[in-house]
Image 1 (tube, helix red, strand yellow):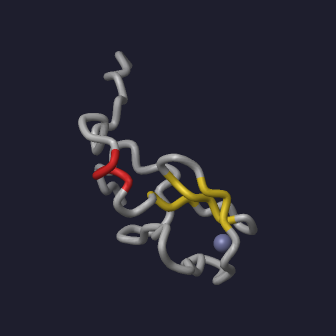
Image 2 (tube, protein in one colour; image 1 turned 90 degrees about the vertical axis):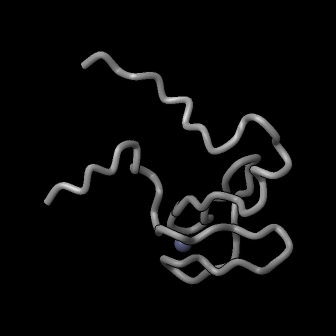
Length: 73
Ligand SMILES: [Zn+2]
C-alpha cells in the first residue's frame, strides 16, 4: 500500500500537535512528560514526536517548509 507520503517518517500521529499552554497527553502511550524542543516535542516514554502547535507563527519565514533538498536518487 503506497501512500505517497514523502518525508512522512517520524510524524507519528497525524493531526496531533503539542500545545505549550496545555498538558499534553501522548497520543501513543498517554503519559504527559515531554522533551520539548524548538519545533517539536518528543514523548519521554515512547519518543513519539509531535510538532509544537503555534510555533510556526513565531518563526516567520522559516516555517512549514521542509528544507528537504531533492535527493538525486
Ligand atoms: Zn508516548
